Image (cartoon, rainbow, N blue to C red; front, side, top):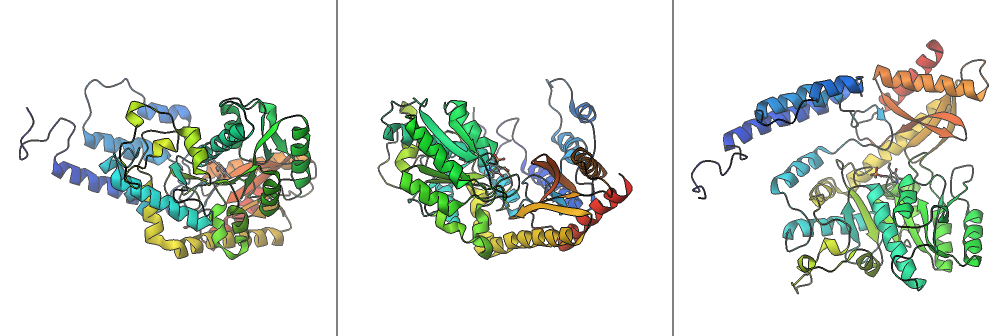
Length: 486
Ligand SMILES: Cc1ncc(COP(=O)(O)O)c(C=O)c1O
């Protein structure tokens, strides 16, 4: 018997309105605490795997626990051991401070629980996502078709998506039967993100036909190596499926020679894919506006709202110019994916243009951020991060004990030079000690990289909370540890 509209909750899962409201307020307070603590608490509280497991591990419960107790466990056992990626002194990997509006949008997306498969199942959510993707296209100047792409989980998924389209088109251009990838090749620098190599592997290309090419002194793809590799492969009877370049590598922020590669790809009739997961939004700023020319010529691009557009994870975007290639790569006919609507807006189905069927309503947070913040405020936040990186460069250059190992976009790599130490393995050990001590002490967080055998401290600033004083603090901390702990 269905419950009456005025009767008790429909099932044992539903919360009474008052409980929902009370718990909701409690959770909002916890969210505020988590945000406030980003300035005060350690960036990453140290605890062993065994310690954290001991706080949580127990047999699968037959009887449930009260929601209050579960939320208390969030507070006591989970939240304290979350790395605070939005902390103003978080400089690791490519992790951003999340826009609070994006957090609320994410919660709302869960409340309406729209698996965004197609318009017929999620009418407004589909329109929100289509609009958000069109705006992302305009933001970077890709200039794709009316529906230029799709939101996915992140940069790796976007790179996979784009290369699946490239490989599908290459097969048909090479006159190969679908799925025969043994003669296809991909090209990228050895600094390119690992997800593109992985895409080649998953898409069935022989591993040694994903050509990892050399880089110049600024870690950008070498054009001569690219031209030689493509010519050699053509002589061998192989078929170049795509050239993959980076608009900012994860490692050092290096930007490949995008314009030259775009010209080369056009001459050669080869698919150009740009991995802009991290760096593409920098095109909004004056110093990096030159990237727009290549973006407007690319066949596909990835960019991540959950990186330099400050969306909470997860939110990536794949843009593809050739809609037919996307359809061919991802459409599989079946009874339940047959679309019967005829209206051009209402017949849209994401499952014909992407891998996933059920997809989270990611469009809500991306659209909310673009709509509420506007391009102007986003540009200013990105410029702020680039300016902070420049400040860090200046501080490094002014300190005789620090050596810059290169910087671009909002990433700076450098190392400490202890007095009297010149041997590479000693230098590497000293810098590893500095970094590990910094992370353990918890006042800031950096991740390392290795550049031609040199262990480097790497600071990546994709954070609207970081202030000039945080950059100064970073420099002082490295100098303090360098002079006292080595
Ligand atoms: C340039 C670049 N490409 C791809 C990725 C992968 O993105 P995700 O971690 O969202 O899969 C990253 C991650 O930092 C990146 O910086």
